[in-house]
Length: 121
Image 1 (cartoon, rainbow, N blue to C red):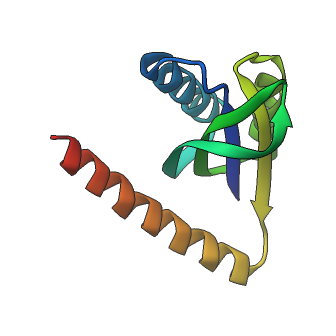
Image 2 (image 1 turned 180 degrees about the horizontal axis):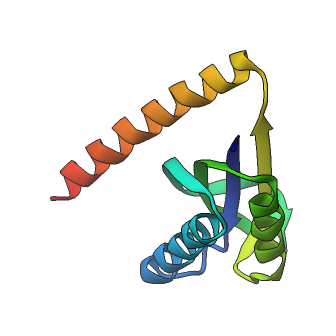
């Protein structure tokens, strides 16, 4: 299995429940196609560098995962047909140095997720 990071931007007009549902759907696509989600980050709604589909803002998510290459093809196919995804990017980590950086990012994301969950309680 290879190491990947995928970033996707959702339309800012979605409700919190709809946004969470789209995020969970993307995680399920990864897991159903043989991938393993290691961590994720929710960056919230942020300003885009330039308008995309007439939107000036977007809800940013990053998911760190391990998966075979066909999982990435399926994930990107899903991104293209999902109307609520306005932009996406998938990065593959190959060298030992890159994989070490990926592992540090996953640890940071896991700590941040735990802190956010505890603050919500």
